[in-house]
Image (cartoon, rainbow, N blue to C red; front, side, top):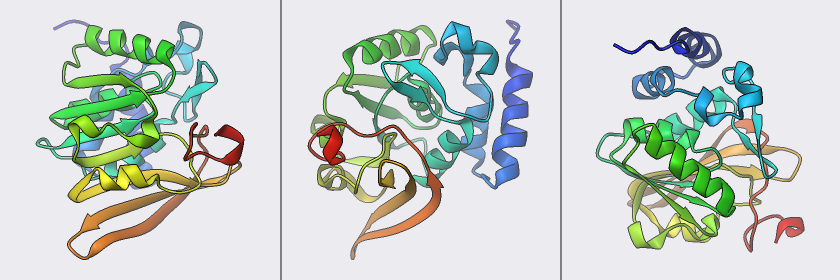
Length: 218
C-alpha cells in the first residue's frame, strides 16, 4: 500500500472538528477521512490544509472550512445512487467529497481558471464521476437535471429559483442565505406537498455572482 502521510491529519480533523460538533452521517465522516485535502490547497498553505478555517485559493475564492464541508454535505443526505449538483467548484474539494459518496457529480464554476484547475486536479486524483462546467451556477446545469441534492458554496440573498426547479422529488438543496456579512445555512426539500425549508447555523461564504446575487455582485 502506498504511504499516506496525511492520513493521521485527516482523521484528527474528522474527530476534533467534525464528529465532535455533531456530524454523525457515516458516509460523510468516511469521505472526509479518506479524500485528501492538501492537494486542493495552494502549496504555500499546505501545512494549514487541515486547519479549522477556510483558506484562500486564488481569484478571490476560498476552500471552505472542513466542518462546513461536512455539515453541508450531510444536510443533503447523499446516497450512492444520487446525482448531485454543486454550485461553485472552487478548488474541487467539495466535489471530491461528494464524488466519494454519490454516483454522479456536476459542478459549475463561473471562473474558468478555477474550473480548469479543478478539472485537472480531480482527474489526477481519480475522481472520474465528476463533470466540471463553466457557467452561471445560479442557473444550475439543466442538461443533467433533476438532482437528488444541490449544494451552493456561495452566499445568496435567497435560494435561486432555477435551482429549486432542478431539484428532484425528495431532493434537498443547501444554500448560505442572508446578507454580505453573515448568512444562515438554509436547507430546502422538495416533497409531495411542495418545498419545505429550514435553517441550521450561521455561516460566512464568498458571494454568489450574477443576476441572483446580492445587488453589489450582479
